[in-house]
Figure (cartoon, one colour):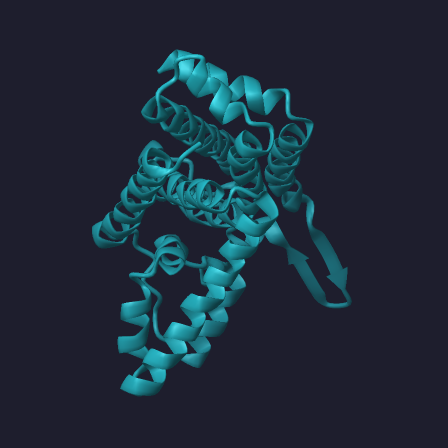
Length: 276
């Protein structure tokens, strides 16, 4: 495992574009900390982001993993280009000639995917812990370490997202076309949702079916947390809006894990059958 992982990390490190994208991603994650400085006064209106509960435990785990998940597209570019470069530079064939089996080759990619997802999760954990300790009104140990399931969901979401990108990279071989296919698939899911909505005339049924689609399953794993903010809570209560269920349910995790296994299986099947 260590040997295979080192091979991939070596390739990523010496690829300037991939290295820069990873640096940009982690810099953007770090910029989350700078939002704590957002304060402004407009006449009688005084706004302090920290006072809205953004950095309160345990909500911070939800809010920061949701924000970080939005930025995952930068790492998707790394994963897709990592695979596409194997075809462009013919390093895949050279690795096989040097004695690496197709299974080991795919495992090396998966280890890299897991390592990047794990590094992102650990980084978010440390960043959120620091911000929470600095700004949260709730600093009891039990409260601090509750809702950590959002970190688990974040890790699972990244692994599935990157596995999808890896599969498209193997299927299409060119990073630009693979990313385009990713975007096209997003619109396909939306079109199918509209068709379901038209057939069933029920948004609830259509949405329940849509939740089984790969991109949507990843999306609803960590739903938007904005209604947890103090000012939004007040407005929602005044307007008597329905309460939102923020829970990371076992079913949501199982669906995303199932898609991860499907993408990995399809990737291996393609590699095994394809004449390289």
